[in-house]
Length: 176
Image (cartoon, rainbow, N blue to C red; front, side, top):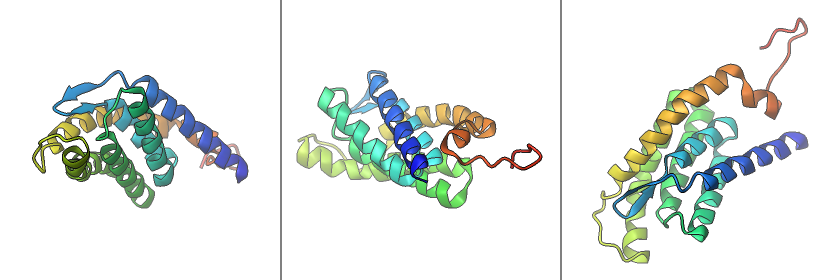
């Protein structure tokens, strides 16, 4: 059991590193920098590691992106809400489309609305209450489309299942 937690932590660290390395691949939309790779990583974390790891990864990635100057404070509510909802819906629903919808809704609607006080009170930006919903939706769509293709293929190939120890081998060599 302890070995599985170390593997999950290592995988989370690798995914955070990918998020940091790919952070220059962002699209400025209004006051936000839309980073589709972040949403792809949120879905990977939510599906393969669970909601706790996904939120932790989103927080660490957002923090490091802000410290490096490649992100904004709006990354916190957007990415963390999407990661949480993606992970929770997949954990209890066990269907990939639920994870994708969780990332889209969590980031764009919930994260977009929660970004309003961050933008107005902390960043001093004038914006409407629903002003971040569309830019966050655009960013989430890009990452979710990438995730829909790659995560579906990874689940079918059982790529992370074998690494994380979730793969059960039957006595006859059949994979359950």
